[in-house]
Image (cartoon, rainbow, N blue to C red; front, side, top):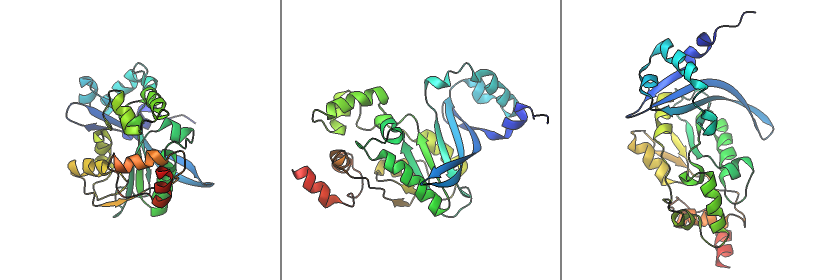
Length: 260
């Protein structure tokens, strides 16, 4: 059987999303079967990256796809990381959809670290979205350590082992407490869906970013859990110093541990 040429395959799977001084190139959807607690759930996967190259930004149609393919191997994309989104159900048209803006956490998401609750939040969000019937999980690659990067996060962890909390550690290393930016992810969200969304988060800054961009985000679902002796100070700092909404369900346990 003759394979179709690559332009035929890719032409309708690549979108250009224009922003003020850059363009997000979005590829997908791609069927992605995922193991969720022993059950196979199929998501539609997209990935994107930002370009400032005027030639790439201004090219259109088949010419844009050809130019992207010709440049791809020289872009060294493996030296960085690209963000992506898992979409479930009829995300575009469903009246009610859940979304999660999830910041990459190498230690929590991959290694299952108990120093944070990120791995729990990642997998729980995917399950919530699948159970809801429609939604999207945005996996944001440049958000490690609330925007400071993996190496700097390792240094911050060393400070935390000597008594600094997660906010103090970032500040002592010369960073803001939270330098994450959601504009790229929001541009992709707006391309995939115009209807209102319900955000899975404890972080009011994510709600504010969506609303500032004009998204009709009126509802929020909290996501606390996986509290342990290893992450209790981290979770408490989120509430007391980073302004995260609502206390964790087992706040009495947390209060008792911290008081000691």
